[in-house]
Image (cartoon, rainbow, N blue to C red):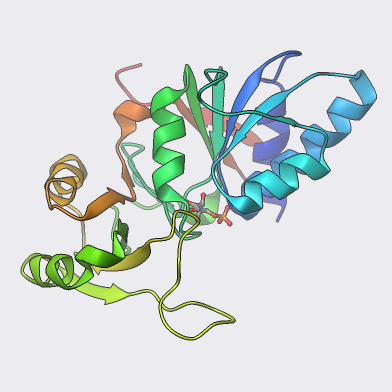
Length: 225
Ligand code: 5RP
């Protein structure tokens, strides 16, 4: 928990009055938003936010963030978490099934910061890649995926049947083993008709990963920045 807190504390120093934030999803983002809420109240800031999920929307509202959307504002900064981060700072996201809007917000934002605790760091990405799929295309996509990975339909919690994303779609978790070329896999997945988006976020998209440990946090930037 301290790692998430320390990463969030450091990310807070990036936020200035009147900024618009692309708000990712997950427990780390929630820690960040709770700290931001305190800052908004103490310093009487006006902070705008574009949420990537209903979770982000509700936690943002509770913390005094003024909700807006991409039709109205461009995010100055995107703050998000990740499920795995490799040594090149490529990420896998989508453990919370919010990957599509998260990726749109990352692309739309001036700067992108990913907040993680040390447990998310790996040498090579290896967890199953979450893929958002249009229900209409499920059968076709599942068959296509079966030739390149081990696909598994994600089940809902608190309901029977598949998990339904905030966009009304399914999630297929696709096990490739170790991802030797994340960029190629991202492109290959998105070339399959019916796949809305996938959870590979390559380092080109990311300005820095903020890694929190039990005692501190630091910025890690992709080599080319
Ligand atoms: C949601 C995500 C999250 O950022 C990711 O799952 C990390 O979550 P947490 O901060 O709870 O570990 O990609 O789709």
